[in-house]
Image 1: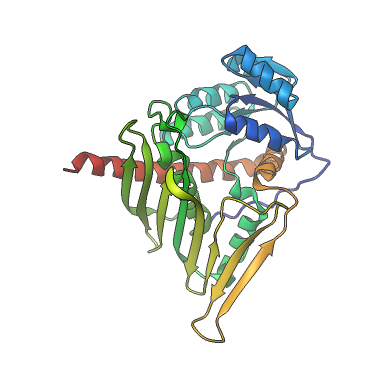
Image 2: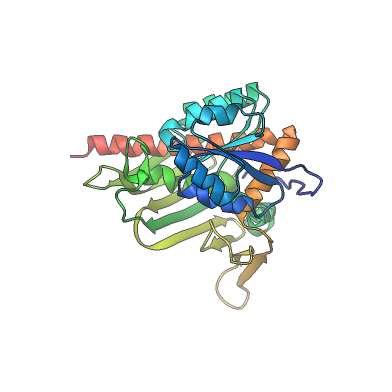
Length: 348
């Protein structure tokens, strides 16, 4: 279990000047999120087309537009680069940004663990921070669950998660195996893997993997999957993900020797920024415990990600933890993808 750091979110911490690479839907969403916190300023954006960059800059108040990500990364007016590009080109941009002395926030997943390690190595070499774009880990609900794990759950031996939604548009980039090779396994399954990293014991070794992949017959994209991870301490994680669900599912259950916690929206939060989970303990009857615990927050996890990033920029001691959890998550994702594709190859 990797405890989320309690970083100092202080008005004394200078704002990080951000440059965004990419102008797609996720970049637009994050540009709106940046406005929620004084610790982040969007000052530049790049796109392959200057027209797109200028339109994005005007919409979101970014000061400069570039038609070259390399020029944005080398600009001395920016402190950090957010790489919101297809997975297939993410490594090159992240490494170049680190080599230019810029801190790096990379959308996930990554092409592979070796690819991610080349990014993190470049960041370490150049003395800059790295973080992946996972939001839920920054909400205080995650830290609350982790801090109470020993008392409420005991030794966690099971993490079960599901992230499923409906994505019917086959023109979406996630249906393009050349740009997003892992499809739903990388895009949605990343969160299943991260749940195992965050809520099971630290640095446990993966012992076995069983993974099954569903593919779209028209595009060949991976549109869903499920499986089981088994670890060396006898804990396990079952997971389901997909683009082909009739409903949005974001369920998480962590079970242990003392009790369990359940979340029906582990990737989200309420409109006011707060988030809840259900704590259960005991057996049947009047002594059973079923308590809903609400964790307050004035900001959503995505905004808190930019605040935690600012803290990491100004405190180098926080950087290694974020690289470590990214690498652990990608390691599990690679293992799932390898087993699932090998199983496809032997079918029939």
